[in-house]
Length: 319
Image (tube, rainbow, N blue to C red):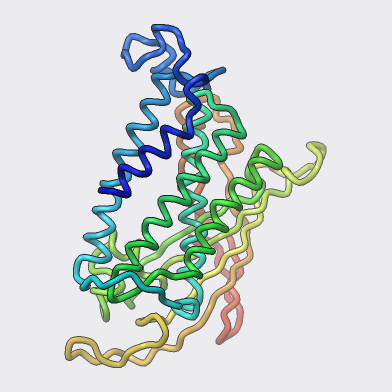
């Protein structure tokens, strides 16, 4: 609760009163305000009603998401005094990519929301990146009070990198020329340690690193002149994954009286195409917004997989 109040206070301080509240009387949360209900057009100047919507939504989702994360991740483990923990060699590095992607993907929609509320490109970027960083830091504090884990300096740096990677591109280019994405597929590993890797699909998406791939989607068209005859909606995808993991540092051979097969741990590197449909004008505000929202997900596309333990594998469609 103290963290919730602190973030609320910092958020309100970040918005300069002279810019936010010196608005006309109609600039409120009234549903009769046509500007408030226009979700497809950015405000020219800070809009009080829109800002309140973002503040309320952000501050409302924060405790709800923290509670959900607690029930999924921490509830079954004892607490302890605050301590540090070095997990840099766990999960073949997958958890560090996860933290980078998490911070990046939180900042991205927040920036669009603040820009919609009329706070400008630079200020919206800084607000969004700062909130993403604070949100992820809260998770690290949770880890610090958990007997099972601890505050990880590596995770903290990864969170910082994700927020900074988003902010740096936005401030430098006013766009994301390199988009961070992820994809997920179900694996057979979760059945052996469901308490660690997930016992159902939502838990597996959160916990099973075997099925996750993190991507850097590089858009060639955005790095060159518009005369380049290359579709703007096709990007080059570079992905990283790992498989064969039933434990963080090493695999286990038994769990709750059940023998676990001996899996070989290996890393995966992917090189292929990616569909950046957020760059396509569908002549529909809804579709344009929809594809912008899901642009953090790598859609199925051809890819070459290079594994550290065997020959390369070609996938005509890899998600």
